[in-house]
Image (cartoon, rainbow, N blue to C red):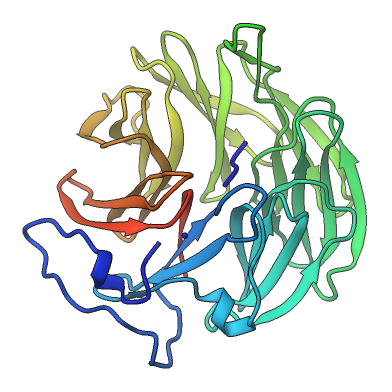
Length: 350
């Protein structure tokens, strides 16, 4: 479970730049800014209301720290788990604050706060008229909450037996990761099961339960071009399952000889993922038998990971002091490094 700030008030004052880049002054504090570019989510410190959102332009030439606090004269909250988008709104899911803060995604002024029936919210997905939030305290609460987009009214919850983690929309349906991992007495990670659940928005009920092969632990779930993709991490090989969001059928891509793969992303027809040795790979998703290409080995312990507009973003997160963000091109060459805040966990195109 993710428990846990980014650019200083003058961005470049703590920026660490690779030799090919210019060390520019990135102070945007006195300018009117539309935050079109990349948003960076920072969990902050567990049990402290110091979660933040930061901004950097798509070309990495300018940025601004903590865009929420000055826009609203208040702290955001405790443990920013994830950010979702619908129309002009950003939905900031605060895990330990048990709330969702809805802000304008371009100026970050708050529009609403949602707390109804929320217990340790995790991830969020949207249809045209509703949004869906997983709640998971890993003990007695494992549910999907459903809200009305128009007025944020709570509609209902769907309870699950073991898990309620990643959630995505694909082909008009809501796909939920309903299994993951637990631990034995020696802290060895074990699968809780192998299910992905399809919820139909027209009825807000479970339509199908997809049971994946007994081959590892479900580590990630993403959506791409109408399909859901589940990453399963095994002890010898790992697997990517392409799931038909309508009928629940799936096909398998085996990552032969790559155990413990994690953090799946998809961009421009390629899979991107990491192994436990912190190597970052790409793989042509159209050719199931193609061999993954090793792009580079990440420094430190990667935490936040995404691929946005031809750039690979990785955070080497610290939960006691500033983290570091490393940015690479799709060939694996590092193009930028800068300091970030406590527990940097995500990057989002805005």
